[in-house]
Length: 300
Image (cartoon, rainbow, N blue to C red):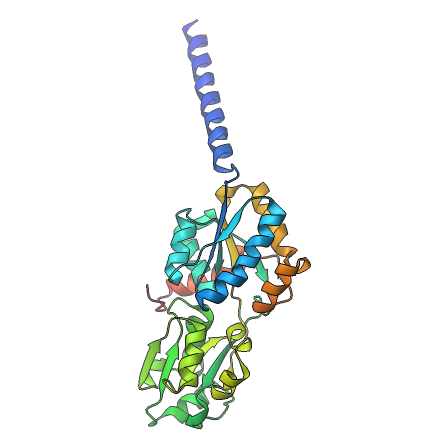
């Protein structure tokens, strides 16, 4: 009899654990009262609030949950917001995707990217008055810079297209770090500031991603022309937390993939220099995790 009672108690305990676990899972997947979206601040706060606000509005209309874009001060804050649950959806570059994965592990889920993000490019630009010509490769640029006291600016240290990949290509093609070639190497914080500072002559050369340059005014482009275009690489995406639950994540995914079908979505995509969003998966960004672990300096 004792054996039967013991087995019965064990069965109840096990069943209780299963039920409790299921309840916890259900609670974790409960639909939030509001969805919070954030993004790495690679453009002016004014622009990002306007256009990511349009994406938030589209998601809200499709999913039926109030959705708000919240601007943050720096790249690291975007990672922290998603990792701690302060945000449900984050617009990351490849570096910040890798950083978030290193904090969150499999709790991070990449759900969509622009059609251009599978073959992204960066530009090296130069101040027009400096007389720096277009180059066929970065080794040629390094040779031209010898003895010239040229200055150089990246965007944020945590930027994929305004630091990590331009730096990686520079080292690969020249065998040197930019600091060994240019008199000064600085970090201006964001793509738009890189363009402004090169255009006004504060720096001779800089590196930034394609969309921020492409949407700039013709006057800025004239003052800071492209001198080199990098090889292609994978970059931005929308990521979320698996704790939102598969059903809601699926709805957000569908909303992003239908962004081009709504007026506000088309306006946002025009800002993002893209035609539409496409499927994406974390496996496409794992190479950046390995790159960061190799010791590339991306700052804090």
